[in-house]
Length: 421
Image (cartoon, rainbow, N blue to C red; front, side):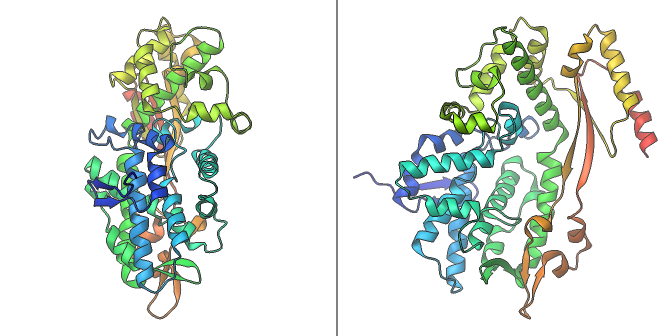
């Protein structure tokens, strides 16, 4: 009989155990193994060369934190049945299994309005059938339909195992020290009152550090302007490939990627035709890199330019603004592009406007409760005496203009920023 009690040597936590046979089988499944070939941080390695860790590592790490948390809760007298423990571990292990190539970067480029959470549920349902209903409770916890809602909070909330692992792990691999958090301390401070996950007052400082670290990681890593530029170039290359293929012009790519370029694949088609889920489950970062490397030799000048820019990291320039990008600035850019001989119909491939937003904590979605020594339960921003915690609930937006590096625009940008001030 095959030994299914394996141990991973994780660079962040040390030894991580596979707790039982069912979880071993799920980790070994080809759907989960696919996560080895999807980078956790998408295009962040264009900025931080060490950011090459995978969704596989993150999922296993989050499962480890779930095990540690359940142990801590049991030590405080909170009853957790073995079947609940297994379900919670499975739910967090599979919480990201619906991610496509480059994680969030191409979430709405390959599919037409289908979020990765929806795909995760479809895959979990498939795996549940394969394992004769053994994942039913895990699916209930994932959907927040299980009658002990604190399990869902551990899977998806403002302070869940997902966030605690990815902030700690991403900080480790990028080398951004501001993202380091006291995971063990927070876990030991968890408690459950009336089926609600809370943090004991002694852990308030660690929660404050967690929220600040998350905010810092967003600005320094997840929303870094170079990552934004790389994302723009990649998505525009796929947009151009879709345009060409739908006009009947050949663009060589893998058989798994082609169906998503030939026509829009929305939720209706994705859920009614199982072959599209099969195609999706065969996609990973390799398919995109293969396509981009191949398109460097495309006969289409625009696709060739975009592919070369991406593969060789000759990315577009980026300017950030506190307010909306002035129309005059965009008009000036368009004028310069037209002077270079760019067709009016193709201008969209040479620039992009948009915005990025960041908020460290949104209590309306899922508040973090602090269990005070007095027995009172306070929302974290009320329990904290730090004004920065209250400010974290404010959504901060930055608008950007991203454009081909063949155009000099710095003088116009300077004037535009002065007007905004």
